[in-house]
Image (cartoon, rainbow, N blue to C red; front, side):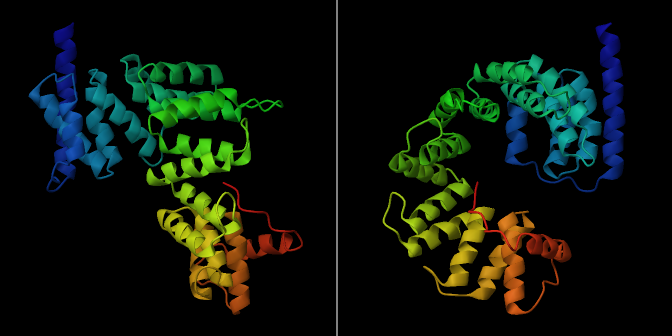
Length: 338
């Protein structure tokens, strides 16, 4: 029986290779990431399998997910863990995505003990992507990954508990898992903890500790942590008010992609606070935030174009944004929330 299955698998791989060779030109140089995955593969069934896996990983590296799926399918059926993980990822990333197929292969990889797959299954059940939403199953898979010290699973479990908060606002479980993840250096867990201390959610307000945690998260690359530090300097919360320093932090966060920071930086440019007044720069930052779907960014962008007497030629939703702005014109704009 095993020989028959091996022959079938080899035949499938040969067909996959033929499809690959027919549709490709010069193969790209193998990246360090691909080499790392290959070196970490425990189930090297044969040099032939390794070559097919290498080709598939190169296709993944080049975002050719359809070809990667063709190559990875037989290897995943053969039980090679790296192939199963990458096949699941390819199904997620391929357009159109196939969440159910991704869930199937994450389940197969999770049964082999992959903490990454176990964490992904937790997310699948937590949000109902590829399988029916089921919080109990989500917690089960997160806990399995946590037993293998997965910081991502710790963070995701904390986030799940935060989303399940009842009317008594018991943050205990969320804080516990955010703390455990933050202790491992998890960037977003550190950021979430900082917000808890800044806003007094489940803990006493501690602005100094919040700023310390925001600085740590900022060093770990969280764009919105830069924004939060800038906000503290802009309003003088826990530090001496300093618009110049606030502008520097907003600039860092905006450059990293924080829409909140982009709007805040636009506001400083617009009013000339902490930075030289520049309506063109302000409008540019509002547009970058609006392009990310930021509501305040959209409203500010429309207001900026109206102030300048022109409308954007390159913004696809100008009419829609104008309608939204007119509907909300009689309302006080809310503060920026993360």
